[in-house]
Length: 387
Image (tube, rainbow, N blue to C red; front, side, top):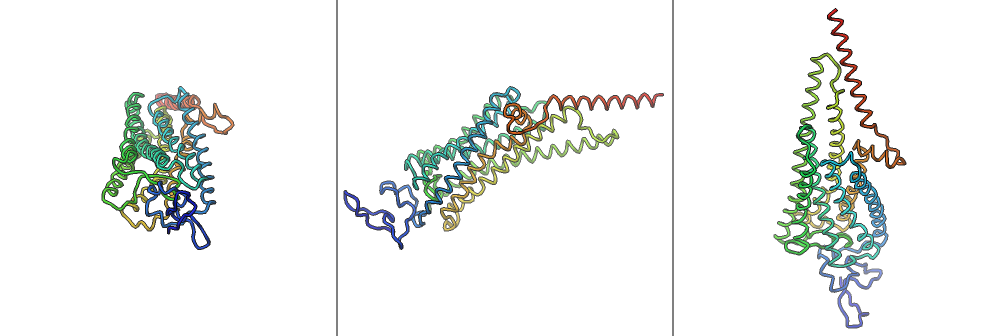
């Protein structure tokens, strides 16, 4: 695996596959200086370096994702941050999630430089910065989805008193940032765990490959903290939410049957709940995307710590990393599809997007007219019966 590098002016030294030939392919880490070889885990040193076109293909994918995330999340911050109709506690959580998604986007320019260089630019410092951004955005996105699920459950199950104030929302947002700190800072300062390159050695994450008890405990703890606990909260609150909605719909059907009418959903409160349900469905869709994006990465880390490491090739570990970046790009567009008031603002400010959404005033007027018509019909029927 090692050949003698005779071109060094200060004496010969060992470099991993520094010289190549027909029978001697380059191995991962071949272009890192000797003093930086400690960054490369022994697991990766036996794999051949990927061809340059693989780096370019990934760079093209990341370039598209970077611009999609920047535009989408930038519009979310602009619309939600400047629209008076969207300034409430619930929408503060959406802004917070967009900020975490933009943190994920901040990794992508670093990845582009690494891919064109076929190595980790910045070495140890660059690796730490890259991994810390990924850790903070990933853990922050997980706990933010849990907080959004809690907010949706409170708002829909208790529409009168369940809405969080802006102060309460701000406190919960502070909690999400505090939640990201332990497993971002501990490996950053190598107090517990560490950040190392992975895959094609152009990305970094926490060490899940070292075969010792300390690493396995660290991986188990970060898996529980960053993935399992937020997932349990999310599943609990959405299960309670959809259970409440089913009970509410059943109650309306039974009441309508007693009153001998087709539906009781024409009143304003039910219209408002329908809007909140659309927002809840958007939030649930984002949660589903989060699960699809981060579950493969969670599986990879658990295999690295507790399973058969021979399954983890450089390409296998690069695919989940791309999936994690994709979800940060899709979040804002899900709200563009599903959030009624956000769609109204997009229609007003960016008409070229072709979004059409019924205005709240129109919907409210129609609801009032329907209620009045039903009352008049009921009154006429009562008068006729009296006559």
